[in-house]
Amino acid sequence: MSFRERTLWVALLGNVLVWGGYFVWLANRVARGGLEAIPHPTFLIGVVVWLIIYSILAAGLVQVLARREAQAIDRTLDEREQVIAWRAGATAYTLLSVFTLLIIGGLFTGWPSRVAINALLLAFVLAESLRYTLELRALRA
Amino acid sequence: MSGRITNRVRLLRFLANEMTQAELGRRIGVTRQTVAAIEAGKYAPTLETAFRIADVFGVALDEVFGWERDD
Image 1: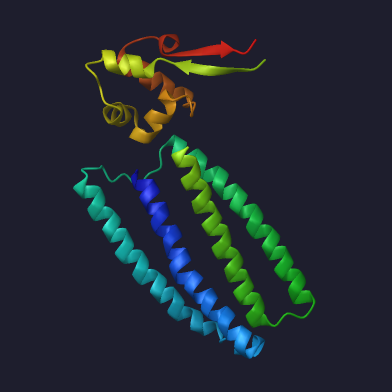
Image 2: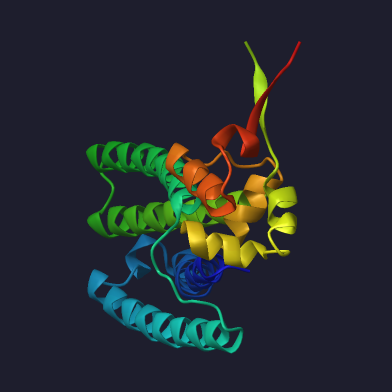
């Protein structure tokens, strides 16, 4: 597995664990207490802190594993990795654009700002997860 | 007109003292996985990379890559 693949797996796992955990917790809260149970957006600072902690630990592990396998840690993408990244990014951008327009429509119809903020965050996380998944699939093909 | 790019990279690598994919990748500036994808016909390199490959083996470009037309 290349360094790029490991990096993408780490990022994808981070999304699933940290943001997936957050949105599952949020969904349970909303199911019990309605939209009023959505916490103030400053609560997200704690989630971001967890994501940073995870990213540092996981990136460190990836580097240790790469050194053990005597891989050259070259963080620049080669030409094939660049093409794959651009194509995956374009698809993810399209998905994010669609979600953003839907959320804007929701705001016009009266969505509370806390709902819109979390919806936008979910859209971003899904788009990034899609990008990582598409890249990993293309790198393995 | 449809067709596909063919290559003799794996053969030339074998003839070059059984050079590894990783070694070829290091010399032309791509990863081992990209070399593997080129050899398998799953990725067509840029013109610059194609010239670098030919340069490594000391042969002309058309001795490394070819074009096979679908008739």
